[in-house]
Length: 318
Image 1 (cartoon, rainbow, N blue to C red):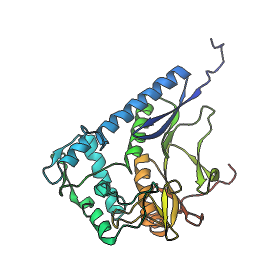
Image 2: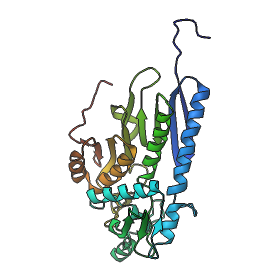
Image 3: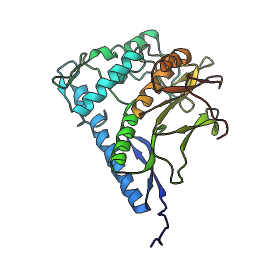
Image 4: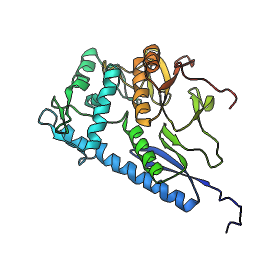
């Protein structure tokens, strides 16, 4: 029992698990551990619900139905999936196709598991991207339908889905009056409230050459961040390092950037723009971010130099 005048101390509860084929870590601030774990279970159920809609591996998902009907007929979808596809198309437009959910139509001719013995030919590369193009995804808001115009076309949410799921799980917990927390979907994370101590949540920009070292700590308040990096998966041909992130417009892996961290209000936008900036390259990417209100970026180039958008101020005292 609490004695009069004694304040109840909040606790921090954290759980890591595999969701959407990747590592999720969910942290909540709760009055006690039991309530914290109940909150986390609710967030997990929400992520699983979203996965059932957007997974292209699940034969019965709405996304699989769209893909199966490519070049055949439009498919009526839920308002939720329609909205995600509509927003994805808008991001494709502002990034000149650097972000494109129809990238899933690409043939996987680049292998990052050590089995590649030669670079693909120009003809193989052109063939691999022939079905990609956000303008080939036709949406009808009156009928809530999605139509992929070419047979064999596919859409996939690998570069936006985790961020979307993190946002929705956060929304759910906020609606349940959970005071604060972090949803970290394998590097796409979103925060709200403060730690149990009342301190701000901090996000570290990792040094890609040494993952235990941090370039800088940045406070994130009611905000999100997503990081794309090539320090885990890449190949080297003729002394050139190629990242596993492939430009859907050219079919070639990106080069010149080691990591991109995008900060914005929601994780969905961070997730999509981190991929886009990686593909667009340092200068074009930063130029784009400087034109979008409420979005910032930190880019680490292949020389391990740090570049940032105009609104980022590093606090070196953290």
